[in-house]
Image 1 (cartoon, rainbow, N blue to C red):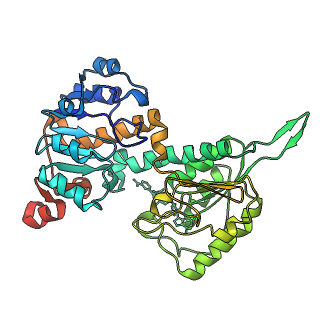
Image 2: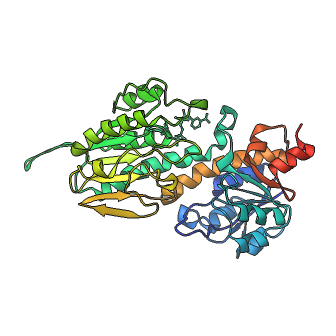
Image 3: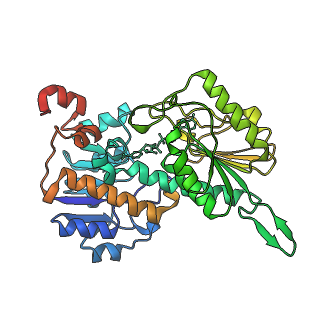
Length: 376
Ligand code: NAD
């Protein structure tokens, strides 16, 4: 089977779907591969590195995907790109969960077999394909660097001839994959770190990273199915917002990562609470895409109010292209071999990973396919 690795064309995107090391593994496993020229450059990989990995180099998107049975992407292809992908090919990438009806229609009309890494179920068998966790780790790390870069303060305690500099105080909201990486990064930079999550189970993890856990008497009210959070009632949300607000006058940096699957992100930092932060303080809101944890957050923008900077970055993982691509590439590899072990296509609808990650196949959505009796 022939795999195509096109260059990403979304604005600010710097990652590549497969790095040469992974392409070489696939070639060794019996696949053929072609990369679009320059596809890996921003992630640190030259065309020559792909050639050395046994990959052909194509001059443009159309010649890269020509004759391909599998097209691997990071971000969604444009309508023009979709129309160049061979009819019936597999398309793999961070392609959402089918929210975009117009895009689904484009996939259907090309009869593409679209498998989205965003929709891979978070079961232990699929951990190696968990690109959301890989990208969350990258974003959590970069969020702290963005905050440190924006802040006018040192993170660590400094004792110098010019006096003692107090360490920065960082508050991390949400201690899932991104939040834990933020805590670890802020601690490595020497900050004094506190963290809060509605799931009491993460308290020990937070403490083992050297941060203090902000305890609130919530019991299991915020614990939902599968180890994820669930929405709380308004009274508890108020209690959380007040507890967070009380900390903000002495906090230099807030990293927001709190999120509830399929819901708007919980509002944790109100405009009134934000107004009590000292000028020069920084908020980095990784929940910006799903509405933000901070009232002032605007997705994809930076807002400065009374000297407090609120960043609402989108796709921070794309700003760490070398390692984000390396991790993502391994996730892609696992999904490729899951669907086409030994280079032979084996789409098994009785398999949960296959079923959950598929958006369209042979011109139909996966729910249409299953109701047409393709399931086991
Ligand atoms: P997420 O991005 O959905 O949420 C981030 C964090 O926000 C979560 O820890 C959640 O509890 C927290 N949160 C939600 N509402 C909040 C509120 N009001 N206040 C404070 N915090 C709030 O979660 P995630 O990082 O993708 O993963 C969460 C957990 O799922 C992980 O810690 C892990 O236990 C589990 N997980 C399992 C797998 C797997 O088995 N393959 C993979 C990834 C994650």
